[in-house]
Image (tube, rainbow, N blue to C red; front, side, top):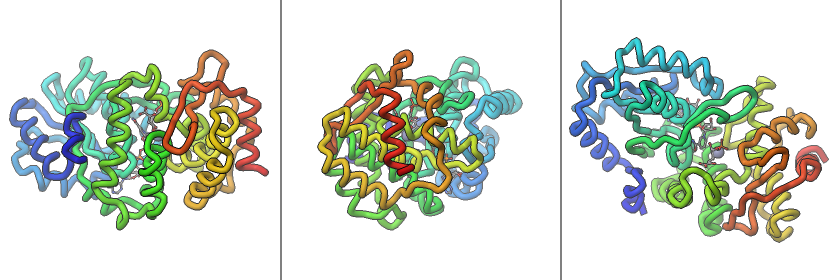
Length: 354
Ligand SMILES: NC(=O)c1ccc[n+]([C@@H]2O[C@H](COP(=O)([O-])OP(=O)(O)OC[C@H]3O[C@@H](n4cnc5c(N)ncnc54)[C@H](O)[C@@H]3O)[C@@H](O)[C@H]2O)c1
Ligand SMILES: O=C(O)C(=O)C[C@@H](O)[C@H](O)[C@H](O)COP(=O)(O)O
Ligand SMILES: [Zn+2]
């Protein structure tokens, strides 16, 4: 399985380091900048660099940002472009995104826009970024109240997955990444979903094979529809509600991790799947029970009315019509399902406020 991912530009463990080293040898970059947040700077960068003794220290630069979703902003993007200029990076420079999804989304976008595009690679350090964010070429920033409103599809030269980074990942971040893995099972592979639900989202129960299985689901979907004309929308299951909750909590000063918000979103969207996508109600209830055991509803939560504007801003919509990605059954995602706003708010209330 792991070898088969190389055709998508995904490399694991020592194969990732070897691929990266050969890239650097062949390209003769003028500068190589590593983009980190302060956590990955302290906990991942030293081990990463120690495995790359051939990197020329005279060409190496490190750019460190604050951790957290607020970093995925226009202000920080501008600071990053400034930093690239101050480091005299040119079109022959390389950016290494060493971090979670915030770093790969922002760094990929910054690299693709600086001087109309410089090379970049992703070395994801969170579970969520390994199984999802570093793969598939979506990059961008949040804008106004909305998640990922400004962005580009732009490919890293390679993605290097080093599961050793997970040794320092906090427990709540495992739970966040686990939600996207569950989503992969729910939309495309019921066996993967059942394998996950039998385990616990902890470092001890996650291995390279499980990561590879999840990321393979994403890579296969993306390879059939890179720019999200159709099928790729299934990867957005849980995200119409999830993004609205994530944005609302961010604004309320009580951030929810992306994955936690998606897990809550999946609970509501499962209910919509029964009403609008023909998913069996008993199956929906069983899946909701599984998910609720891991992701309980937070005490602080928006009123249904508070979600309206955020839901209307979702990228999958057409005009004022809400379009959802839902499930026909466990393992089968469907997309472009139109759902009236009133039904969404009712189901949200049934799940979270009754
Ligand atoms: N582009 C995509 O396809 C895609 C897919 C899913 C999510 N996303 C985006 O990704 C972001 C979420 O990514 P995330 O969950 O990785 O968040 P994140 O980048 O904020 O990382 C989560 C936290 O874990 C810390 N961290 C990361 N790796 C660590 C390590 N090895 N050791 C210790 N601490 C570590 C970070 O510093 C941060 O505090 C969201 O903005 C989401 O919208 C993008
Ligand atoms: O890669 C995709 O496509 C996804 O939808 C994966 C999602 O998990 C991810 O959160 C993505 O960033 C959402 O994209 P958006 O288009 O809804 O902003
Ligand atoms: Zn997501």
